[in-house]
Length: 68
Image 1 (tube, helix red, strand yellow):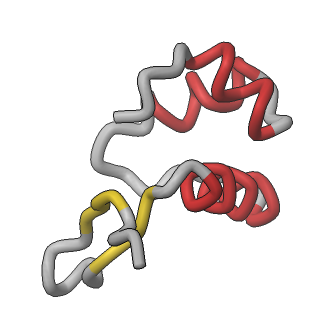
Image 2 (image 1 turned 180 degrees about the vertical axis):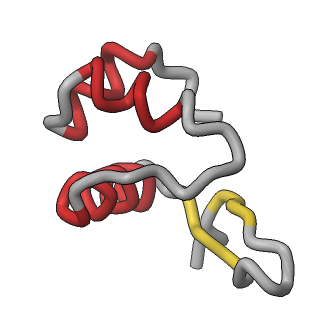
């Protein structure tokens, strides 16, 4: 979605590459991880213009933020 490699995204988010690989390999499970790590991931995506929408019950997803 962002066009970045995992290594580049990890560097921008200031998260270890191996941590992102571990989180990605969790499949449909909620990954066990440090809450601060998950907050960093979310903030990095939001800073790139990604908006998190919906809820797990309604079908969560992402989209590009609408430019005002």
